[in-house]
Amino acid sequence: MTRRFDGSELVLASHNAGKLREISALLEPFGITVTSAADHGLEEPEETEDTFAGNARIKAHFAAKSTGLPALSDDSGIEVDGLGGAPGVYTADWAETPNGRDFMQAMTRTWNELEAANAPEPRTARFVCTLCLAWPDGTDEVFRGEAPGRVVWPPRGDQGFGYDPMFLRDGQTQTFGEMPYAEKEPLSHRSDAFAKLVKGCFGG
Ligand SMILES: O=P(O)(O)OP(=O)(O)OP(=O)(O)OC[C@H]1O[C@@H](n2cnc3c(O)ncnc32)[C@H](O)[C@@H]1O
Ligand SMILES: [Mg+2]
Image (spheres, rainbow, N blue to C red):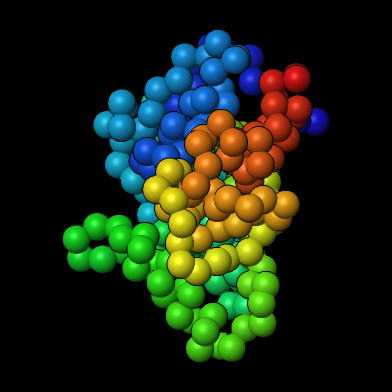
């Protein structure tokens, strides 16, 4: 049995502004008071697991225990078939530089490694999003969503965040980086996972 969410307040256990924007929009219709990890002054826990679900659990349980409130985390990334599924759970790590995250660098590395591997076109990939809803008593529910597509070069568009400019979802002519959020939303891995969360925990 899936545990239902029957509270009125939820902490979003993420420090990523793009995710916070997208998940807040998805939660809007439910009339829940949403606060973020930053609002509670929470640090970022180390993501030490090698699965999306494992890292999503770390983040959600850390926020739920620290605040005493139910917490929703998102662990996500891009899996590129020609790279054996990399960067996968290391998607954010590929952007790290001494001066903070640089996603142009991360996208360039992704493309360069595909070129080096002589990977065939189309260079299929998927965005994955794992949402974990955790309660302060240590229980949780986990939901996984995906968006299938391919990576393209050069990156296109300045909307969205992260690797959006190099991702062309199946059936689309514009990258996620070229779409206003309203267009990306119904096509995204995040809304796919969110629909499962709603079905499982919000009774919708
Ligand atoms: O852990 P939190 O605080 O939630 O924030 P984060 O940015 O570190 O998030 P992750 O550890 O889950 O790393 C996910 C990476 O995948 C990228 N990513 C996830 N969803 C994406 C999307 O919808 N569009 C573009 N890039 C995305 C994102 O930019 C991150 O670099
Ligand atoms: Mg992270």
